[in-house]
Length: 150
Image (cartoon, rainbow, N blue to C red; front, side, top):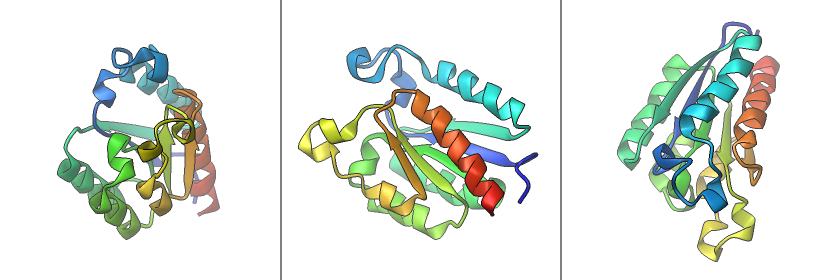
């Protein structure tokens, strides 16, 4: 598939609306709007469309993931804390066939034991963690390659 004109959905889970305020020593000072602007510039350079979503509720995230299969060519996802235990989000990700990359801002492998298991990542094509918000940039580039490979 040609990447030009592709649509990528960027879905962020719970508490990511507080990015820049919440635990800046872990998640940094950039806001979600800053992240959207940063990857928006890359999308524009590559002539792809981005649509951004943020939801705190698990069911709404499941619905968005299901809708992505009909409206997006790729999915960049940060499910937040749901990544550790949500079978519903895992199942929704498994049910769709578009390329999917999961992103985590913090280095989850170096955090509390309960954060080290990323259930939802097992239903994605790739995982980027621990690189701060730059992970979104890398995730977008990874999706562009996955879409190109078709």
